[in-house]
Length: 297
Ligand SMILES: [Zn+2]
Image (cartoon, rainbow, N blue to C red; front, side):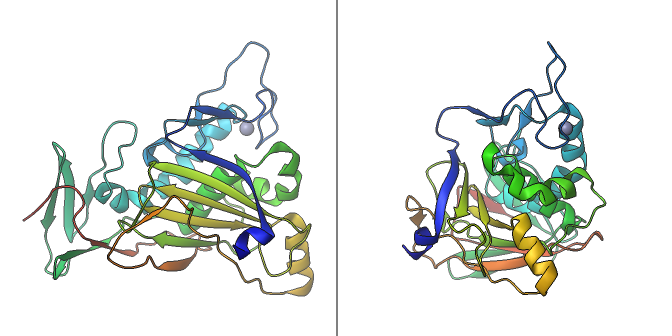
């Protein structure tokens, strides 16, 4: 495949494999703090627990950074994904989250998804399909990007880390605008593509030292039918862009070979601009065949 002529896979983990601990444990990969002799840092999930991760952890994330990421970034990413996690029945630390807005209340009760529509626009029926329309809670797009960039940065093999120092700087300081406009490609595929595992992360690195027109690194985060493609540029690419004001186009990685495609229709890839540091609400839509048992009022 063309994509693999240009990119190497440098990291991969799937949730149906053994538990793994990433990093070298005596120094925080983010702030550089050294772990005091005989002391432990809080358990750090490399992929947030609310996405259903129980198998991949970071041993080089100090407790202070862990708190910052949880309070600032994961909180916004959690709001951004709440609706999808309810529908896709993603069990976080304790249970499947509830979704509540002016338009709709969705809740999983004893294994059954109950949809209570409060607005005529909230639930549309098209043949045997149901389209759910929801307006998210307020979230800060930039914090969502920082959460995703943090997840991917946490998985980069130590010998490649120095190429991405600008990402480390922008995640260490919540108020700092990153040096390039963050963009995210979202494949809101559910439920057309399902992998056999619930959580999957993979990192692709471009074979060229400084590729033109393609990001040096692409992280892919999957949970229960949703893919996020997170392009990350190397510091050399950032410096080139800053010097030339040259735009960048992206090649997106193919969905992994073990993806099972549903009958309905191919997934759509959409790009989101996550630059804004102002809280916003967005319309979120999901089209369902029938996943599990659903009750609609
Ligand atoms: Zn730290």
